Every structure is written in C-alpha cells, then in structure tokens.
Length: 336
Picture 1 (tube, helix red, strand yellow):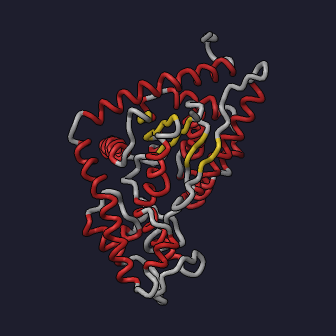
Picture 2 (spheres, rainbow, N blue to C red; picture 1 turned 45 degrees about the vertical axis):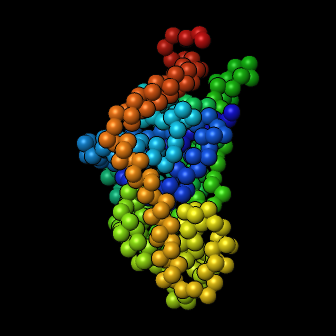
Picture 3 (tube, helix red, strand yellow; picture 1 turned 90 degrees about the vertical axis):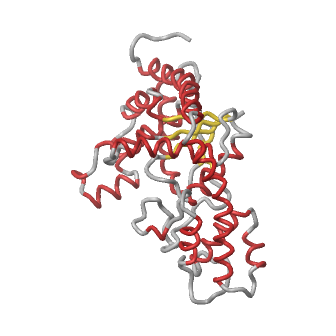
C-alpha cells in the first residue's frame, strides 16, 4: 500500500467545505492506502491561542475525524504535539531551507503585509518546514490537499530533492518524494455570501460558512440566505453564476448526484425550491455525524484511540527522524 498523510489545524470547527474538500475523501482513502491523519496543533500556535479553548478544539476535531467515518483499525489518528519527532524534524528542515523560500509562502506574505513584519510571530515564517516534517516523517507517497495548498507541497518536494541529493549515500534515498492528491470535485467550496472567496471557518460573516456542528435550523437559514443572482436559472457557470455554481457543488457532494443530474432535475424550477432541497440534503448529511460526535466526546473511547494512534505514529516517525539525524551528523549514529 502507498502511504497518505493529512493534517488539519484545530483552529475552530471544520466547515462543510473542509469536509467536502478533505475529510470526505479520507473515508475512501483509508480502504486503499496506509493512512496517517493528524491534528496539527503545533501549527495552530503560530497565532495566539487560549490554552483551554485550544485543548477543547483538539479533542473536538479528533472526535469529528472519527464521527465522519475514520476507522482506527484502518488509519492512524493522532495529535501532532504528542509525537515529538515533528518538532525535531522541523528544526532539521529549517536548517536546510532558505529564508527566501519561506518569505515566498503566500500566508506569510499576506499576513506580514497586513500586520507588518514586526507584528507576526517567527513561527508564521518558519511553520512550513514543520509541515514538511509532518509529511516526510511518515514516508508519505500522497498528500490530499485543496488546490490552494499546492505551494506547500512544492516546498516539500523541493526540500526532499535537495536533502536526498545532499545527504544520500550509495544512491539510497533518505526521504520519500510525495505527490499531491487533489479531490476530483468539490475541492474548493466557496463562501455562501461571497462565492468568489473560499469558504472559511474564520470568516467574520457567520452566514458565509456552514459549520459541521451547526444545528439544522441554522443550516436551513444560512442556505436560504446564500447569495445567488437575479436570473433564477439553475445552471453551472463559475464565471457568470458563481453563487448557484457553488451551491450545485455542495449539493452534488452531499448527495452523490452529479452536477449535470441536478441541473436537469431542477430545470424550470426556481432558487427557492432548490435551496430548500439543498438544505435538507446538508442536514441529512451532517445529522448522523453530529450524533456520533457527541457520543465520542462523552466516552473514554476517543482518548484510547488517540493514545494508540500516537504510539503507532511515534514508531514510524522516530525511524525517519533517526535517518535524518544520521544524515546531517547529529548525535551518535544509531544503526537500525
């Protein structure tokens, strides 16, 4: 089996966009690949966090991972900070990555321009090497991401090529070269209020996103108020009709029907009927996930799964870390 790694920050409850673009894929992937799914809490502290709230969000996200259908018998589910190899590998990677590469990262450029370089943490500049470490520690062949994350995979691939070329001996590569895996459809769900922008859990306009833990009445209200256009014609056209196109993508992902089938089914019908049916489809999708989520938070099962996941992750990550240490000359060489 090829290996897949994916991580999500515990920076708030995932949206339906996170579910469609990433988490939904995980259920299928765990049957076909050797999977590592990580709550990347060390990434979350690149911006200030309230400690108790962060801990709650970590457990909440882990519960959602399992509630959507991840099986701990098929996939390793763990918390990043409970595997110290991530931080250690991140330092080695930082020392083999240039400032220029990091300053070109979109998130650093955007936030440093908005807040001024003196107003952002050093971690915001140097967290991409930690992300590289997340991937290489598990010898990942594939990394499922949204299309807006491809820049980080390019950084990872550049690092792996450079590291192997510099340190590999006898043509034996130290690190595995990962490939990006983009969802075939629904990989970029847009805001319900600004359909030219990606849906985000950090949106200041709560009407712009559907949280995976939103109650049915809230979901119906948000979809009812979603921005469309004045034509009333249900058709797929990203450029001219981004609002209804976005809703079609959500509907397709929620039901498994193709966009073409949906367009045909709603031919001659208005946006009101379409939105009402879409809302019920989203409610039906999320309700069983929410029930299972509450069960997990109230039981000891969640912590048992995370303990076992961290132990399994350490076994693999520590072996890769030791290869990296041996390669760069740290400590006394350990032979395995």
